[in-house]
Image 1 (cartoon, helix red, strand yellow):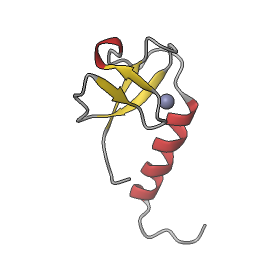
Image 2 (image 1 turned 60 degrees about the vertical axis):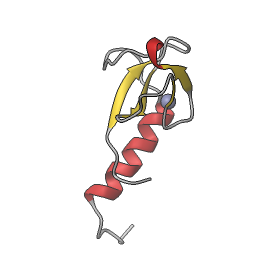
Image 3 (image 1 turned 120 degrees about the horizontal axis):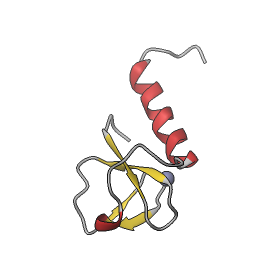
Length: 73
Ligand SMILES: [Zn+2]
């Protein structure tokens, strides 16, 4: 995955805040954890329990972006 930007949205399906690609404009959008929800049922928010899978995936990508030369791990 490239250095994308995410929008955190609250899914009305499982009531968790997932990370969706910021440029997602389809009627059915897919979070980075592959959870899908209709665009209209996923308002932007940072409040609510966050999806742990999305947190881990986004955190992993951000770490890779922030430390491109870090091969010591
Ligand atoms: Zn998720």
